[in-house]
Image (cartoon, rainbow, N blue to C red; front, side, top):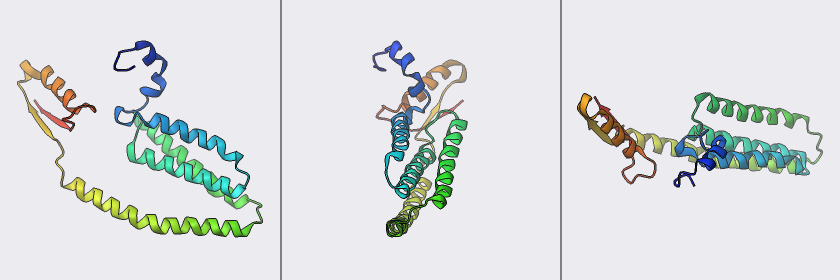
Length: 178
């Protein structure tokens, strides 16, 4: 509908579409699903699993926001990060007030979390080192545009917009020299 230029649809859905950067349009759906899962957490019968589920959902949301910075406004990204951190803190503090006497399930759950962290931590470090090495070898800009300032400034800006479009086959950053 966006490609068709349906203005009525754009006005109706602007609270979802224009809040996020074009490269992170999928994040609106992700956050709706995350919020739905947070609302479903109280229906889980065991308090221990409720806290763990809330922690996992918040941690995944935090990782997505930190990795992609989806909102157009930096303060919105910071407030989303603060919300996720606050939920993680509240969940961590809530775990001290659980009156569950089933220590076997708690110990199994804690062992599962520790084993998962032991496996994912080295993988995360290796992935970070790989991305850092890959990024350090890449050029900052893929295209360099030079133009006559008075005669072709608008054309160079249009060319930069077309080169940087997300659906373009020549996708990459462009530098305009004026």
